[in-house]
Length: 383
Image (tube, rainbow, N blue to C red; front, side):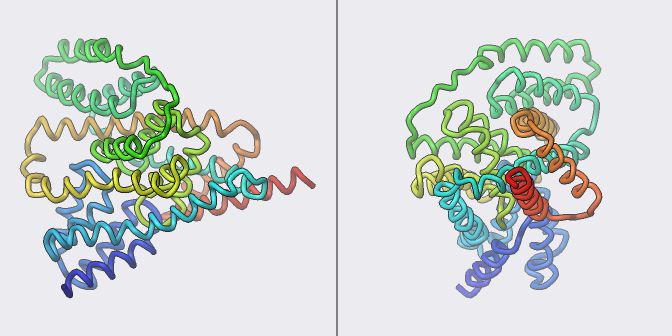
């Protein structure tokens, strides 16, 4: 019982102070869990970090679960996962309420106007950094370009990832076997059989808690590629397929997820609230996080063996590149709707300069500065 209280206290605290992306979260975990308390060795901590990259879900939340499981078994896993996520979900829920009530009032809109260009830049920066790590060979470049093409044509982002993962594994395997002719024929063949999925209807249907829950459950179950890939998933499911959000509302949800502490998955809480109030927020949050609990509990012991399997390793590499390709297409689509005037371009350019010139700057500061700049532009226009 004492161990569970320790876990709850530590991860509640971390949930309130961990701004930034998973890399920042994991660095704080290392300081608290390894350096200060010595619950696990540094080497084992690194092994767990590697394991989180091999299964779907939010990496930093899964690291909390891994640590809790190591310290206090299954009860520790549940406690760590809930306590690390809870602060972010509660804070995001408050923002979601304020947004739903005041989002259309002129005093609030200038701040949102300033935030959106910064979000585009932050996503593109993540694409650049992840791409440098994920693109390991020429075959993965081919896979990424192909996934960009089918995503641009309108194919569902989740399906794009699955096609990219399967296609990439086969393509790289054949090309490494010197069967390059057949490997190049594989690309158009997969594309041809995928065509029936490309034309999709985006008819708006009535919102239901079951659909919100199942949609987020599906996203959580296939969520490879880091937090920013959620932009593509949410865009595909809630904007294009269901028609329950506009792209502008999606950008606002992503902004709130960036601006609040804790895991990026809290954007689902914001989206669920906009669609169906408190019940929708709960359904979306529970749906998106359940797969992480299941994967960590069941698959963690198998991860070291799976990574050694050549085909599985190729599949993961291809999925990661596919995720980056989808993120790039979606960010360009969002940018086309946001960067429509000189003020938006100025905010985007200044955000990019801050990201590239100031080392290790927290994205929350970029968003805060952009919100203030958006409000200043509003005041200038209305003098």
